[in-house]
Image (cartoon, rainbow, N blue to C red):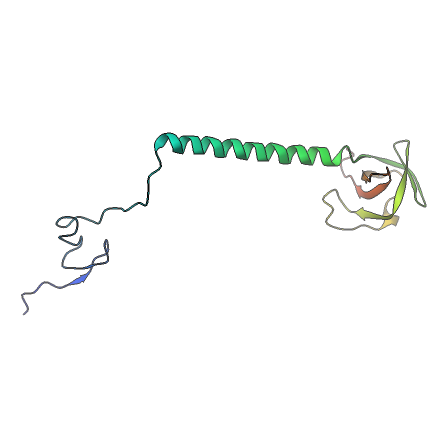
Length: 144
């Protein structure tokens, strides 16, 4: 029998050691200390957290405001009263359609619809271009 202790790799330090804890490096049988690159002072950390929260709130508010402003002012929602050629009447208001107007199934504008599916009495949403012509038309399921 050998009187020599078995040697193995220490799980804490990765050094060849006789006991777990690498004796001689950090004291006898103590795990290796956690090494950190730097520490952020508590006050600075709090300021960074508050700044991040304010930044995220501003980004959310700007995104919410953008989505609210994009749909309503650029067009509207209403019922088709008349639809002939490039002319359409929605809620007693007359509009012209762009020659390359796009028709969608919903306001998410993911799936296209046939122009012929837009008939009198259907609820629709629409987007106006700079000339006041309808550039996009979609179905509005809930009527508003």
